[in-house]
Image: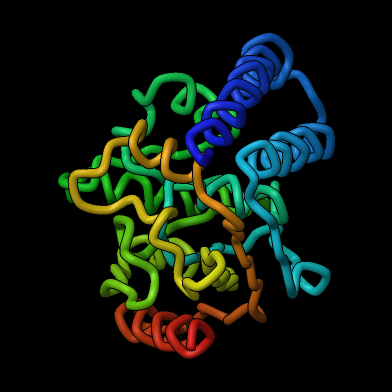
Length: 245
């Protein structure tokens, strides 16, 4: 029965993804920022809904993401859609591999994603400068300091390199806590994107899941001016761990 539900959800998702790709390629760049953000929010929320995912968000009303560096823990490739469903202004820094994913790559690139070669220190420096420039221009730049996806309950160590962008321009850091859950599982196993799991396998697990939900908790912004990046990374990680319980 769950397989039938999963197949039905994916059948409905395909035209939605193609519609989003059409918008990105034909007219997205020419739209005003507010209009682009509204479309990103709409597309992201509908993506979650079509996959049977309930969105639960707190702290969004107090958030002022413009010119702030958003950081979040990382569990699923759908984390970007979950954040965009509540804070569509976010421009994510993502590993360069995502750019080449079928359909998804074109969509995230169209949404203003900054791509990074994580194995290259020189490229990391380039993205730090690019992110700092974007923050000064009033953009909200979003990063996953863990650098890759984790299982959910326990966070991986935070890398402080990209936090330097906020420190350099004295921008605030906006912490966001993501918790995927489902009945009987405080931390969903269906949402995990770890190990040798492929994008197709992950998509199928999510589509077949029962009662899957994503909790997006936006925390108060943290000033980055004058901070040391490693100490800031550790403090932010500790706060997210505390909120995850």
